[in-house]
Length: 327
Image 1 (cartoon, rainbow, N blue to C red):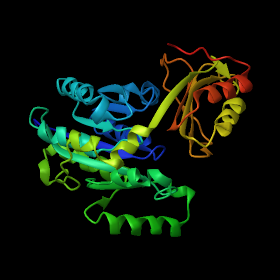
Image 2 (image 1 turned 60 degrees about the vertical axis):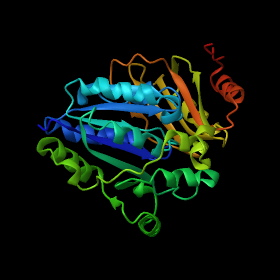
Image 3 (image 1 turned 90 degrees about the horizontal axis):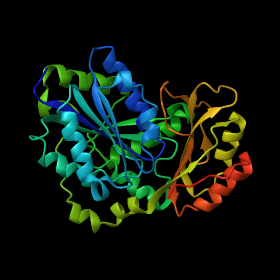
Image 4 (image 1 turned 90 degrees about the vertical axis):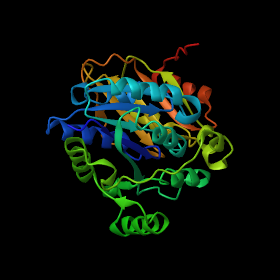
């Protein structure tokens, strides 16, 4: 193994499939006797996404709740990286939340790459082909997530036509000519090669990260969009009917850009499931959560100008349950 460890920073808009990519990479690493330290950043309770990852597939899994990692929790993020650096993981994977601006995070990592012994540093962006360029005022933030990305992946291709995929490819290629398209298998091969052979900065997908200081972030209107997306967490009953949780997700207001519900169902009370909504679309297949998770049932919502009282009312109407909010 190389004395330096590769770092993969994964960006992408809410619901694009970043955590799914992390799970896929970890499974591919495991088949080659490689394990990664994983840091998952989410706007609300990051432990929910962390619970969806099999702990046996990773060297460590660390949740980080922050809407803007570079402004709110940069020191905590770097502390988690230093802790991971002292462990036995072969590489480091960091997933930023779905409205994060990666540029404010890239600079400190470039400055601390020797201290953290990370090389190469790869920034990959997951692009949801269903919604690219259709985010309204948040489109500029979605495009910002591609700046500095050496690699990008197209997700949810099975839900659109080939013509729509080609249109997104053309737009992204024109706007970001220095970025290269890849997929989960190719990205896993790249990271395994870098881990085993110490490929260094010459590895494909590694490029000079743009300089963008924290001070500049606080003055940048696109970066400040990330501060406008907030999250709320609402307790749910210990067990719910599957049809009920799906109906609740469908009834959430349009201001909810992304929602996740971690629950046990009446139909299968022995397991926890992660139900998800992106935009107006509810995922038809909930994700089973590995056994042993001890996170209480809850609903996480992310969006702009969220009315948490109205969402609590929807929970009460659906389940006849009054959520008790923590202080």
